[in-house]
Image (cartoon, rainbow, N blue to C red):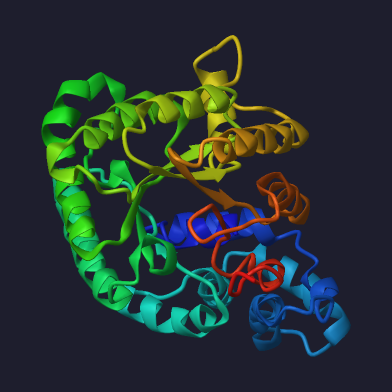
Length: 361
């Protein structure tokens, strides 16, 4: 997955060849063939072996050894093409569509089973004002498309959109606080008002730990916006691997003059949070360093969110069957639409959630 993410972002072939040589030259790909029941895993594995079949070996038993040897040499273009093909096969498993129209069409089958979708863009990170304006336009177009597809189903039965604030401004950091409030907030408000027009939920996605305070300030300003009075579809994402997550929930409860939608995730930037803390010489890490503590924090935060149904609509994003079962029991047996929901990433959680989705009994 890391390779597939990086592959599409490297602009020059020399660096791409060096990455391939470094990351897969020791891979024993042949041992993976037929070992997975997932079609895309085997397809991706064959993609990695595809170039091996095109080069100097005709012996199936030596494919992996031959591939590793060829990668270490200077002629990577053919290997690059094979890896590119394999990674794109993997990407199709986790990406609903190349554009929002395709994503909405591809989601239809699972929606018939009871799934609902929250859409976001891939690779949001505005480095220039031109980038930010392009993302703003993309979000506006996506809201129009998602809103029309929702057809008035509302926030509990219809689709949502998730946005990254770092996509809306190239200087989204605490050091540029005044500029962010003056330039980014109007863009956020414009998108939120557009989402309200269609009555679809809008989630402010999670960012790195050093951006949490400024994200909360923008959320607070949005919650007190007179033009959004009476609308209960503003969402915010919090990460249970952050040690201050329970305190953030307390602040969100105090902030909730309306009902807020809160998506609880375990966290998405663990490696970078650890590395940043080391580089800056911090006394401690902002995140838990053991998964068991994150799992425990998640359950404790889930209890907090479920305890205030008048202020918070919890959205529990997890692929862990134990976590899901624990939250189900925390919530009690008298489920009603709008009490809470579970969420998963497209392409990852469907087998688990096929046991969960459906009409409330």
